[in-house]
Structure formats: structure tokens, C-alpha cells
Length: 370
Image (cartoon, rainbow, N blue to C red; front, side, top):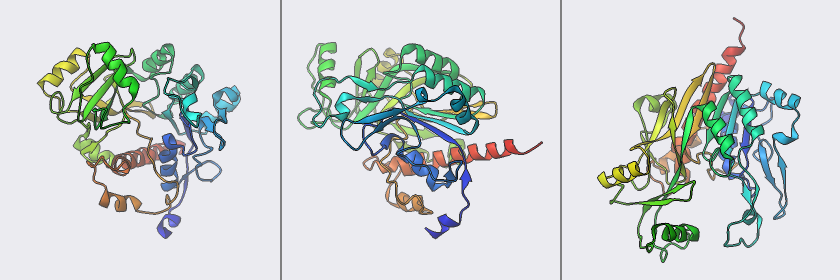
């Protein structure tokens, strides 16, 4: 710990958007704030980042069902401009939102009404202003999927040079409803209704959901060999970002197309069989899916993470433990997806560490007189 205190701190303005905060564990952005503090990036006033305060979005109270919303709607134009002037990085962690069931002691089995969520026109305007100012931007799943309105999504896609296919997907370790009582009932019911057949699946599979409600299943060893998606990174990306060649990712992903301006840092590989390639093609999907992409925007960088990458159960303590990542990697292999922290320490930690350092260094250079 002593070594960490000897490292000089560096001030860097970071604006975080998180509309999916149903409880006070702040899990959708907690790991980002942990990393900012671990790498000794501070706010302009010299204080560390506080996961419970330093973001725009939904703020749950300690009492169940109580909350407040603090977003751009509470900012004047001059206040928003002042925020932009002090910002080096904008991070959209999650805009999915919070629903009535999230705040109930006993959630209803029926779909619940949205309380707050979705990227809105004010968010998009701020994003455009940051983009025009060549500020670094990171967005990830879920930024533009449901419940973001389609017109806002289209404007985001046009600005970013990204096109969402409408598909999201996730690995499930067991589809037998008798063995897995955590399978969403709506998933089973909607599949039966759409396909006019019984739900007779068992074992692991990749489940694909379209925004129009369509559900498709790619079964282990039938359509895919990598039932848990592999995030693959080239040797160039491994050297540039300190990430491993292969990491398992068993959580939600969104499937996008990107313009030629983008560098694909990492991509998903399901190792589909011939039957799987045929099925993906029928769904309008490619053999490989982007996982992390980046394009240069003048002096800035625009990143898109095609997964729920900031959602990590990382404790707020011990960020001041220098070299802690080496300790964790001794026990958590990059391909061991059974431990949720494995993805954080083996992939998100080095990726974000290098991105944050690069953002800071470029901003410091730009401040120097010619």
C-alpha cells in the first residue's frame, strides 16, 4: 500500500452517465470509479472519485423505492459547457434504466413499467458537443438499445459510424427449466409462441434476442463450439492494451457493424459450426462480432465496448493496493469465466488502464504551448 501513496496523483476530468442504478452497490459503474482511484486520477479539486456521487443518472436512496434523478436536465447550458471545458473523457456506462420491479421488495412476475432510462436528446447533444470538441468518448452496451428511442439511436449511429443490428446475445449455462430456475419465464414462453414448438433444450447455449422480440437459440456443439464467447485480441492489441489473446465473456453483448474508420481491438468468436454459420447468416449476422472498437476523432478517440464491460462486482476498498492485479491474476485465469472477477482483472483492468493513461498523456501534450 505504501508504494501507491508515493505515486503522484494526476487530475483528469471524467464524466460518467449511468441510468441503471437500482441499488446502492452502483455496480454498473463501480469498477470504473475504482480504476480511476487505483490509477490515482483525481477530480479537478484533487479529491478521489466517489461512485455514489460522481455520475449523471439515477440515484437510489437507502429506503427502498425512494430515489432522485440528477442528469443533464438539471444543468443550464452554461453549466454543461463548463463541464465540457473541464472534461477529458466521457463514459456512457449504461442507459437501460430502472423499472418498478427493481425498487420493489417483492418484484412482480409481470413486466414492470420504466421509471427512468434510455439515452435522450440532451444526452445526445452533450455527446455531440464532446465529439466536436474532440474529447475522448467511451460508450458500451446498453447505450442505444431499448429503451432508447429509435430517432436518438439513429443520430448516435450516424455520429459514431456504428450500426446496431438489433441483436443482443448471452450465454446460458443450462436451458433445462427443471435444472435452471433462473431462466426468465418470458424467454421460454415467447420462444414457444414464436416457434410453435416445445422448449426441449438442455445444456449450455447462446441465446439471441432481437429488438422486435425474435428469439433464436444456438446450441452447444450443434451450432457453436465456443458456447461461452471468446474475446479474441490480435498481437498488436495485446501489446498496445496489455490484454490477453483470449478471454471468456459469458454476459450480455450487442452485435454491431462499424465503418471502415474503426480499428477492431478485439472481437467475439463463437466458433460456429457449418450449421451455426448458416443460422447466423439467416439472421443477417457475420461469422465474427466486434467486441472493442476505436476510431480517431481528430485529437480525440471514440471507443465502443460491445458488452456490459463496466458491470463488475469490484469492492470500493483496496484501490490503494499497488500491484493488486498481479495477485488476482495468480488465481483467476483469463479463460476461467466461473469467477466473475476474472474478466475485470484480466481484460477490463488492463484495457481501461491503458486507455485512461493514453487519454491523460494526450491531454497533457495538448496543454503545452507550441
